[in-house]
Length: 242
Image (cartoon, rainbow, N blue to C red; front, side, top):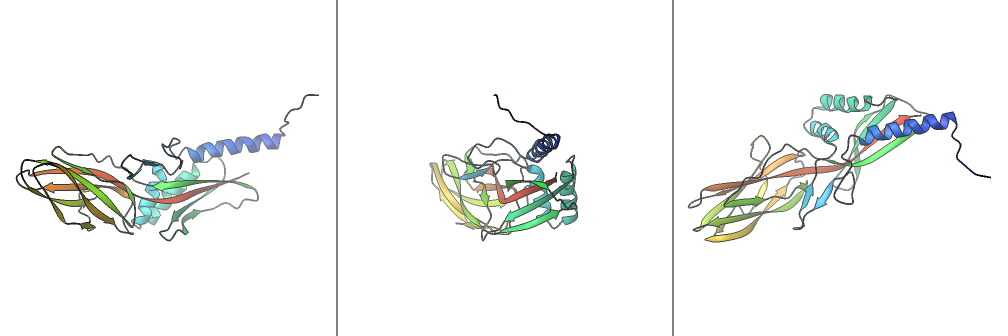
């Protein structure tokens, strides 16, 4: 006798609810990542720098507002995402702290469920603003990074004579960041050569897209810039009643 699977009406409804809710939740994330940590959107380059992809932009925007202290707008945006579900839903956002603990940022749970489906996904909170790389005889390479880290920013200079280069950091609105840069300047001799600046990203840095700017003095008198992201990790959780 052949065997098959029999779905009751309740089971069919539950399955449809599950698929619809899962599709809605995951639609806020880019599905394809070029590295094994799907949803975090991390990938490495051959120079072993850590870079970030543009992922889950809606949740990143919520977190960016949270960092700026605009909780009302952040809450409204997150509640708008929650309300897109065709079924009663709750939504929560978490942050991975620097001490490897997890803290809850927002919890919008107007519903009390006897039975529920819970979806969780790791998230990288990262803002992309479309800043561009600029460089001819002065080229900068700045890796994206987590907060509270020191990164190596490489500067390659082609010059006909000895020139002094200074490195500065700016946010997307061209405001200079008071971050520690070591050394404060480097001397490049005639020819083409690459040297490195150490930049310390403070623990309270906002997630955003920044750019590193190398300023070369005489006889070159050129600047070069390269954008990079400062990101954080977290978890987004959605509950749907069944």
